[in-house]
Length: 222
Image 1 (tube, rainbow, N blue to C red):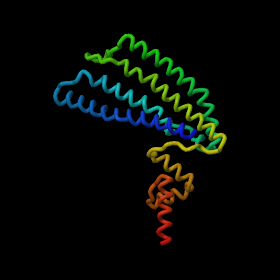
Image 2: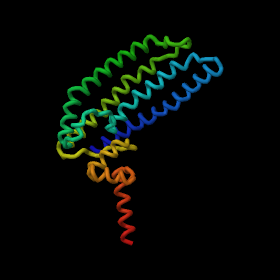
Image 3: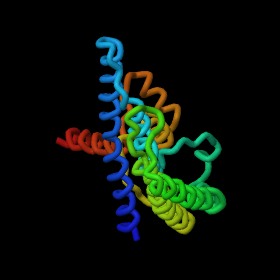
Image 4: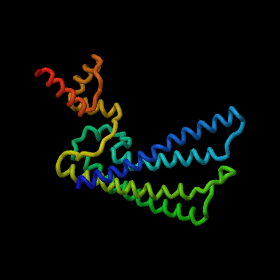
């Protein structure tokens, strides 16, 4: 089961990281348009369409990737203080009541939206070139399907956490500094961490901290 969960995590990661390259294209298009418009007085007719399509693709296709990393914003500080079982129970209820109905509605309406655009061979009305935009609209039901897959994975994780009392492992990336600080504060204690930071200590991921401690113990033993 864990292999299946991580396999879907890897799929979400592959899609998210692939579409992350849209930011490179978006940067190039915006830079080219600004230089052409203000330096050469020759604005393009295609830059606007390219920018909103690239940004839209980047934003949508990163959704399942962010969910696989538990990276969506949580504004409830009480959630962080709950034990894992209570967190998993709350997540499970919210997935069933809100997430899945919303994603199914998103997929169905998105498919009709794409199908109508495809039948009409819809083109953009925002520029004289009028590029075809129905392939871009196909991303709507596609991202809904990816979010549905990843949501099922998260439900399984919730059920395992309720049964075992701890969150099962998931793939990880470079963590944000606030997440590292919270993890270190939980592991070492807030006062001890504050004292270390006051002495100029670095915030390191838990795995890196363990590796350094083991290396230091080996040196002391010699």
